[in-house]
Image (cartoon, rainbow, N blue to C red; front, side, top):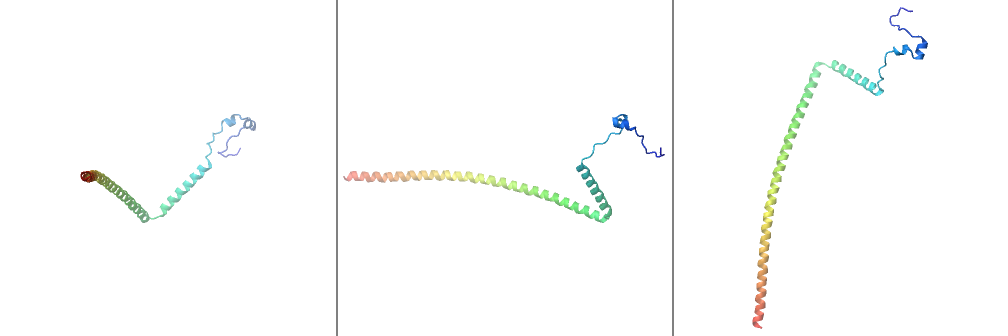
Length: 146
């Protein structure tokens, strides 16, 4: 037997084939990773290593400039969101004002329309009574002369 410390004792071939104690003592295998997971993991690990190398290769001034740039963009986006919120509130307020104005005008229009209808009815009645009076006078005038 060689003096190698990493050698493992082997079981006789009869025990291995028969599924004897040698197979029972074998260490349990981990379930194999699916190819997609292992490939994805290696891509992720490779990208992470590349990013770390890129960051390590950039000098401090470039990194500070990038951080400042993204900080400014973040502040601008917050300002944009706040501005959008103010615009939405302004539009909502204006819409409510216009709704109230339309309702007032609708009520005024209805009142004016009702008044015009009353006036029309009044003048129709006047016209009818005047025509009736003229007709009566004509009829009476004919009867009186006849």
